[in-house]
Amino acid sequence: MSQRGFSVVQAYLHQDINLPKRKTARSAGYDFEAASDMVIQPQSLAFIPTGLKAYMGNDEVLYIYARSSLFQNKGLILTNGVGVIDADYFDNPTNEGHILISLYNLSNQIVTIHKGERIAQGVFAKYLLSSQDGFTSTKRMGGFGSTGQ
Image 1 (tube, helix red, strand yellow):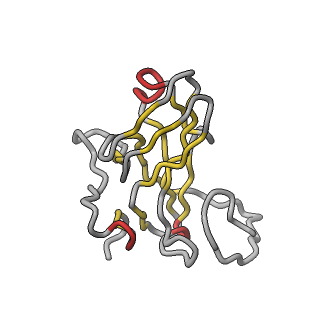
Image 2: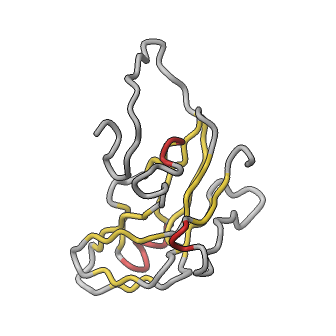
């Protein structure tokens, strides 16, 4: 396996999932697509499956950002502003590291996301540790607030 990249989770292996791609040579973000059609009710939250997981070095993170047109065109925002996918999320035993995009519909209209629609972008980055780090060993067992549980 290479240093960083994407693969399809088992449940979506035969569902024509596209691996994220950058659209230009100078793009930082890899575009994520919805793995299935989803309807988001007005003033409601939805977790959009991507069918993907990401692998990276131990000192790296994948940041997830909403596509800029998502709010402008559909009234959708990423619920936590920026998603953080840690290296140990990959292949965790609870959900295999499946990346879900958490979107909130601020509008008063029903919004439909279609399979293959680009909904987010991911940016890989290295991070630094504090000299007082002293973390406690925790085994990741899921996503969305699972660290340390």
